[in-house]
Image (tube, rainbow, N blue to C red; front, side, top):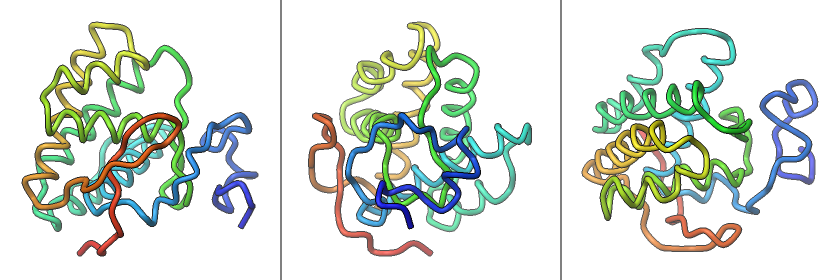
Length: 176
C-alpha cells in the first residue's frame, strides 16, 4: 500500500484518486460505525455515478442491515445533488481507500452537525461545495442521513480535528 494512505487503485483510477488530494491523516478504519457507513455509502454511490449507473440495492441493503434504511435515500440524494451542482471537483474516493479526504471529512461533519444542530449547521459547511440553492437541498439530506444514523445508534462519538474541522471519531466496533 502506498505511504500516502491511498488504496492500490490510486494509480489505475486518477479520477477518484487525484494527485492533488488533500489528506486529513485520518484512517477510515478509526471512524465510528455511523461515520464509516455514511462514508462507504457516499463512496459507493459516487462510484456508481462515475459508471453512469443508478443507485443499487447494495446501498439500501447495507443501511437497512444496520437499522438505518432511510439514510440510504438521504445519502443517495446528497450525492446526486453534489454530482450535478458542485462548484469544483470533489475528492470522494473508492470504498477501499483507507485515507479520509478533506472533502469527505467536510461531508461527514455536515451529516454529524446536521444531526445534532439541524439543517442550518449542515448548510454552513456544504455551502463551500455548492451554489446556495443546491447547498440548501444538500444540507437537508446530509442532516437527515446524520439523524437517521444517530437514531440507529451509529452516531459520531467524540470530536477530533482534521485540517481544522471537527469530525466525530470513535474506535470502529464493526457493522453487521
